[in-house]
Image (cartoon, rainbow over all chains, first blue to last red):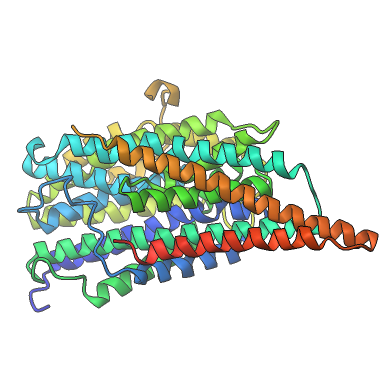
Length: 415
Length: 75
């Protein structure tokens, strides 16, 4: 580890920061329905999910660098490119968290990588067909698969069980929900913590710090596991609220059906080699469960905003990644500028989030305040366009204005 | 461009079948337990229903165990 350069240290820290945002962005996937149906208290739910994520990170020693494998040409990838990719992914994760929309962290990371690679090596270095088969198609397939499964399961469950309502029923579904949510957490830990380990290892190899083809060092496994667990425990309460109560109203039985469908779809997909994003799977299964009950509703306005965010994830992260990469290309001071930009933008987003705090105390409140919705609409649409120009001109003070509620086209127009 | 329809199809089929199967099993199990609850309220017992319920739950537990096995021993 003698040749541990400064840029490498920056990349590792940024990768861990991404891992952290990944954890807290995705707490909702495992625990939103469990929290909204009251099966577990919010704090206990996130703690359980954090522990299982940590356990999951240690379960498998296989390096999951599927993210970089195949999508971009790895030969000649520099630490700066990875850094730029991470900047794009982190900013998109934070922005979607601010507006409370679940979006795929993996897509954000892939988008960042694609953008940074294009800026660094041109369009030829990105494999467009891999982009379609590994990113776009799964994004469409995941909610359909999981949604249909959970819709049918919910319908059958109400058909078979009637509307039995007793102590045994209540306790039973509670236990079932906890078990299936635990499985989702565990699977998330193995998949997503591994991705960060893969990224860090890739950077270490690219920086010449470890030999190509080696396993991730123990400190990488340990720190990646800790980062994702910590992020999960902090909890992205805004997203939990959207997923748990914003999309539809769930009874315990539906929560159980949704969570079971999510767990099986995630496991089936990762085992059968057609990788689906956890976020897309869970969102789909929650909506399916909502539709499966007689008289159940899905709030399509919230769902539409979510779909818009999904569609924007890859291009937005790619644009930021590309911008960051072209600035880091200017030299060491360029890298410093991007680092400052990242910190300033993150701080700005956090500051804005404090205007309306969502945490474990108010996460299951039924009323979704109108303010959040309007800022969501305003903030979801404009950033990509705004951010690019800011990035390309390499001005630092720009981030403060970036998520401000600028006049925005309604999300429908952006689809 | 090569889309792996077979993989997508099998993911779809397996997810659908196992989700519906598991949820129905679990619901049957809970039905059995709530029947015991009602029987106990009347002072009777529902041994058959309870045995069935535990069989259902055992099957669900086996499915969860298989899920953990898949997570741990992924190729």
